[in-house]
Length: 94
Image (cartoon, rainbow, N blue to C red; front, side, top):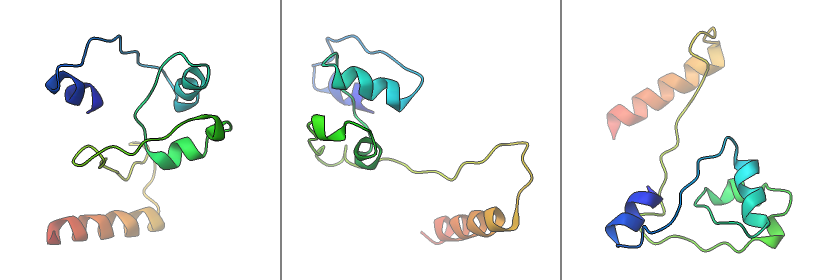
């Protein structure tokens, strides 16, 4: 989403790197080697969050889709089924 936003604004003249973990990404940001767009709660949980500057994004870029996720070959437990059903019902009603 951030890449598309930068491209639309004509400011996409940078190298984009994909890393395997948020911890790796934030380590590079902490070292001054880049920046990231991520959920605030994820950044606040980082060990050195107090060394990072956070700037909220403007609408409509300040919204991220959150999903319910589980291993595809894992047995669906009763609590997971209940939450999945609740999510399905509320999405259908929206």
